[in-house]
Image 1 (cartoon, rainbow, N blue to C red):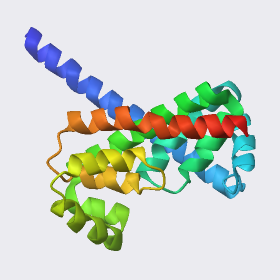
Image 2: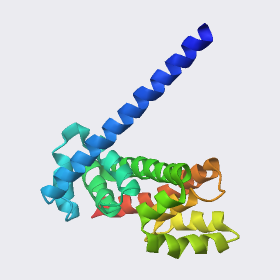
Image 3: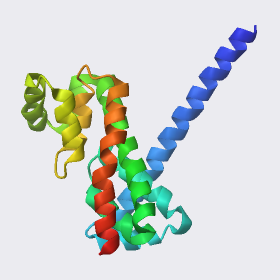
Image 4: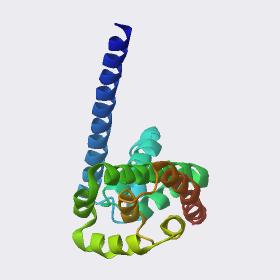
Length: 196
């Protein structure tokens, strides 16, 4: 009897967490749509003004936007890095961006792994998928190449997070690379933008 109750409680908790995650994504999507409609995603200054409107909730909103922009790349990640550093300083901006971008990268990997090739093709676009998927399969040292892509600026790392979900790389290794390599570039952006 106890085991059945425990299983039922676990199932209820999963349903609540899924509903909360969907609600949170819905809120962030509304925030992004509102920002686009009002022209706040055209420059770092405009985006910073938009974030100021959220007051003490601004860091959370920025973190969620940065997470979602990895999964659905409709907002340039650089805007968030610049706004975060300008509004919350080097350390605060870094934390918002690092947490959001890392969480989004891990989510993109999980979505790629869970929903497979057709889903990844739809998200990344057929042409982009074909361009990189064949190249990834030819790489014998893909783990090192992926780590380098995450470290370097201007690499299409959001796309590679999805594509890596289709490889044999373990989730543990992927998360280790993201958490270990992502902070350096984000930290550099935070220092530069805070100084500016």
